Length: 126
Image (cartoon, rainbow, N blue to C red; front, side, top):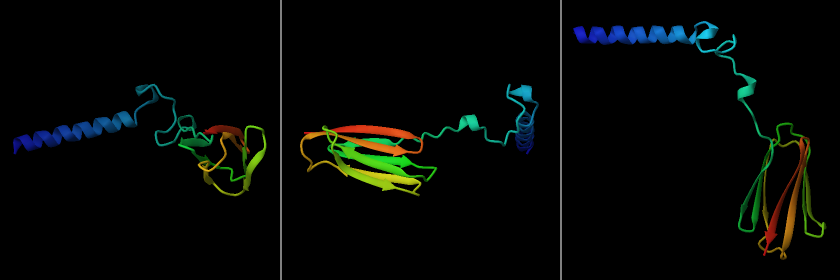
């Protein structure tokens, strides 16, 4: 019984001391004086660039469009001829797959234009 009391006392001491450190003065951890429950904007960084994944002669596009603005997708061949064009408006997540398995042998460039910039990816079909 005495050992159980000792364990309970040690556990209570650890709990109280950890609460004291968590809510202690600002110089305890060298942090600024902000509240501990607030999320700092510097810690969260969201990349809004599209993600291109190539698997064989397929090209997959994923884009997080937080502004839900207009996104233009265009595919050009090596002679800058427009092969495919699409405009998407009002969608937050854009997922698209481009299958070049039956395309002519060439280099194709996918161009993605949104409010934040222009992005390109090239795939070679052999």
